[in-house]
Image (cartoon, rainbow, N blue to C red; front, side):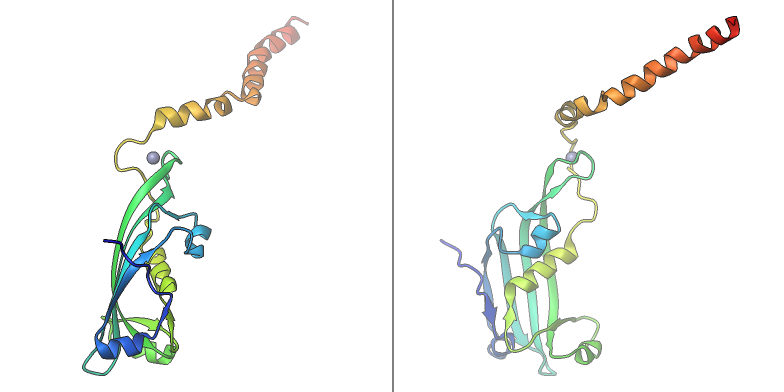
Amino acid sequence: MKTATLPKQLDLRGLAARGATVSGTVAPGELPRLDEAGVALAEPLMASFSLRRDENSRSVVAAEVKATLTMQCQRCLGEVSVPLSTSSTMACVWTDDEAASLPAFYEPLLVADEAVLRDIVEEEILLALPSFPTHETECKTREQFAALEPLNASSDEVTEVSAQADSPFGVLEQLKN
Ligand SMILES: [Zn+2]
């Protein structure tokens, strides 16, 4: 079964009144703020939005995102695959004041008539990003270090070492004189 692409823009309040559920995929490259953060989608992500009205006629959006990200491992600087799964319950608000008066169990979702679903998905991922992604098992350090070796044996260092080795003789030379 082919999974549909997530619709771009929707009237969330209208869908909440109908108790609708919207889900679909977002392809890599469609989330520019992730690109800016140095994060790539390893494969199309899955997002789902369950909408309903609560007893106070708020439009409630339960959003779930499942994605596999490619980030830079902070230990070996190689690419690491990071599975991410987010789940949030949000309520649609028109203004910041309305957001401030929401019960604590809702996250405010500031939307006008139509919401851009990709923006919401992107925000969910950005909020859930690990700050220190690393490989769970041992990093491929051998490969990494092999790649770094020419840098480690830099000519500056070699020069410095030989200069230090020379200096005791220089001192001896001075003592002789
Ligand atoms: Zn690593």
